[in-house]
Length: 326
Length: 115
Image 1 (cartoon, rainbow over the protein chains, first blue to last red):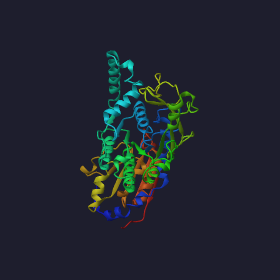
Image 2: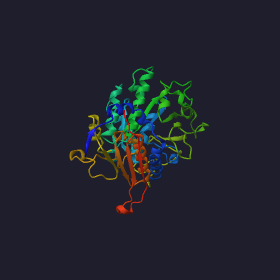
Image 3: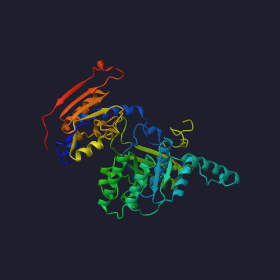
Image 4: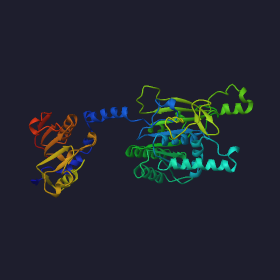
């Protein structure tokens, strides 16, 4: 190799062209574009647990999804069911719930997974305990190398959460991280810029490490308890909804619950859905179905699962689709 | 990208080789060319084209080869926008002998750069 004195002040050239290097001709992306279309056809998308919605929504890598709802609207139950479904679809999941102990989170998920109420009278015998123990063992084996839980409750420093997300994505190759919820990560409901910065940081992590981050968020107090929310009802900085890729509103039909409690099956709302999920934003939807679906769900009390139709069989998470026959 | 860091270091210290080879296929010496005084060899095999920064090619003679015409053309454009002095880029036809290589090729000669 012949080495000469450089005729270019290379350090200066690099500095001066730093911005120019980021302005790229569209032609450069043609290969990536073709690959993306090809990939789209060959790779199974990661979807919602409800089979009827498989073409309407996709959990893409590198995105952030918000799950917003009022207090006790079922956000954590819905996200737990989604986490189980993601594992059933072959994804690794981490859950950071700052409102529930890991064992409580697991207890809920285990009940969903076995599809029965372990506290039901028929299981309160020696034989019953044994069969529940066996099922819980099966659940534990199934979650091995699929599920991780972050063990901390109450308020948490947002830098710690950011670090946890990086660790999960980089070291454990986890594909989906659930953070429940935003209020515990950012001190002060009126700290708009803090919330915006935290969500921006999550978006960067999702893109840099190609993970999907699910962020649970609360809604403002509604005008009445039965009101159906929209995306502008989210608490805190409005920028949060602008920044994230997907927004789901979780709504529990309390009006039906109250009426059925009062008058039973005579209620006109008896056959209405127990829970509704409203997709208010899906930024990168490319399908030809409904990209912002509204999903009606019926609650199976024993299994604590939300089902697509009243009377449907409970979900069997080890298979996808989540039926016993797969 | 492999093999570009020693070249960047060299240029940061005010030294420049006459030429650089950019290989878009499995490269035998992109990882250790600098240890044996060989012509700088950079491998871009498997890299996304939009992530490739060829600014270390400024004012150098650059030889590019790829098995893909799209990639050979794009690497040619990238070297051109990085102000390489002379660029040759060609598509290699797999398993064909040298005299049967009839794929796309192009040459570009740029006026002298000074910064």
